[in-house]
Length: 392
Image (tube, rainbow, N blue to C red):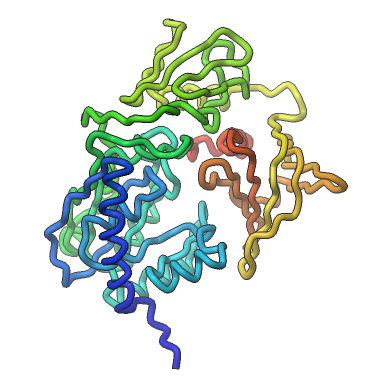
């Protein structure tokens, strides 16, 4: 009879193998070292961490000597081969991105009752700027539901070694991960919901005083995935990156992205020092911006993929993507697919250059070319949806 248990002994075996491999790989490629935790390995925990790099589960996992069940995007499990391999070896807990997933919560409770430790990145999305994203209050409910001790974990330098918008990884001079705080059940219960949320945010939040540098010959490449408003001429979709520099296709703006993650410009009137500064300007600009054309944004050579709850991804169209005030349109050869915002429950960014949106229990993806900015569509959609407080 097939067991319906989530936690199995083989997960410990595969975890040990992966830990040995990734300890060497992550140091050689990224200069990353995990600080080994000395916590009680006979107790199971909920581990909460910041989310900056695609390999965060492996960065985090190096600090612990027990298997960890990671809450991971459902999209990762839509590849048949990868899904079977991961499910057998590590059994991640799938979650629908951008929405409350009750099935995921029930699975977390099941794992906790079986004595398994769970790790979750409550930002729900990898940071684009290096700043901690706003945490949903539902993370506090999950902490209380699971009734197990809480570990607050911080990955320092994850954004620098693997920026979400960037081209490949970069080697650091000392990125690391460490346990910053452990809260017992008694300590958790002594805190109000607001106090617990603040404790989580403050503990896992990013640092800026580590004097880390990151080496890459293509430091700035693909910045246009997130930076699409020129701070000088205020034109949209005009930023272009090349190696360590970027420029505007319309005006004379030029700049450089440095090894310490700082920005410099040929125009001294621009005061931005970091990508975070530029993104804050951009968010405010888009929020106030009045579009004058019926077509707000557009891109060529965009794939449209469909995923149901029971099937793998299916390519259903490819062509030119247009965004209007009330809809997305994908105009391909011979057909046009139209999706009205009134039918869409949520729009989120996926990976480096994919836009995901939900209609009912199914979801769709727009996947563009390497320099495609899903972020500009996300930002504009949130503006139209009057959800400025939710912006990344």
